[in-house]
Length: 218
Length: 279
Image 1 (cartoon, chains in turn yellow, green):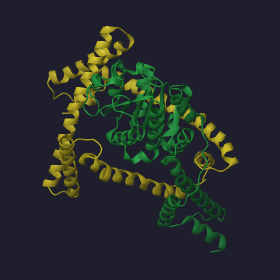
Image 2: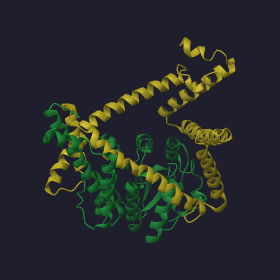
Image 3: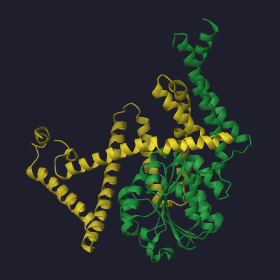
Image 4: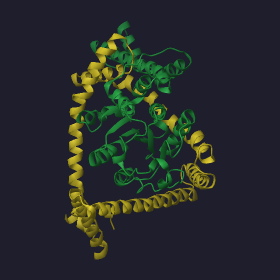
């Protein structure tokens, strides 16, 4: 607590207390709102959703500004890989201009750039994974212990589910469904509940002002 | 070095470039060699198909297209198959695209299927487009579609579209089918199903599918299509010749190759371990 508060010692009381009060009031009201279904509560909810969308739009503008600042600084200083920054900036400007001027429907410059440059690049990057997965599976998937053996057998059953093997496929499907619906689900549920409890704890810490890292440091 | 050790050494030290080459051949050859792969339909995919099939003409289904180009090989066929099925049955669609590159995916699918089926914008479907912060958008649509989307993707006011007459929020749609390559899926489950109790079905990539089985059993999700296999199952059910059924040939050969590589690696490992000299 001392450490957390220490990082805000240089800030004025307004900078310290106003954000905390805003977060507390907003968080508290929205929690109450969830459990009180009436017109006033619905209005508060809709109004706050509008606010979040507006704030989000400002955040997008901030992101754009940040991208331009970082890339131009890299180009000016001729830092390593500055050529990529030029490509980023050119791409940004072209797409920003092409959309509003010629539209974003099928067949426009914007959509053609998307389909014939961006889409193949993304698809290619993702497709490369298949090669690395094949190589990694060959090298790493070894039965070094009982646990590794169980993992390997489970992985093979799930993979074989995607391959037609005649009558064996029916039997394999039963095993695959069992793996997905019983041990997999038990593990996933445990993780999901842990994450959920963690999220609630973090939210409570933010609302009550214990967690303040979102305010940044001096 | 005796014969067994030599074999083990060879099996354990295949150059990765050979693996890349063999996999490339395994992916390319089935594109040109025509053979069919039998598709076994699972109950979770059939649940999605039955849901759409049971919709009456004029009813509305919300189709969320939340994926980017890198996952389109697996997910685009699902979108096409569902759109075709809906438009052929005169079931109407409200479509959103909440991932950054989703609008391009949706625009292409809508354009192609609308041309095929004669579906009309504003009458048979409404395309809402993209808005950032998907969690907030999904929550806001539970109040009114017009909060995050006062206009559709093409800039037309939702109030002026005949299909949106009397349609306010999730209460007015039969359910949501989210086709997603990322974590937007969880927002649909938590917010659309959790908060507004709208039935949700999912179409996700193969690697994501196992993450969503718990939601299937708990009833938070009523159907699940996983990867290209899921898409191929849907195409089989809806009697459509799509790219997923074709892609299953390639996937079958590639997966078989990976399994063979795993087996070869383990044979080499066991031989070397028996000889007491693990490589």
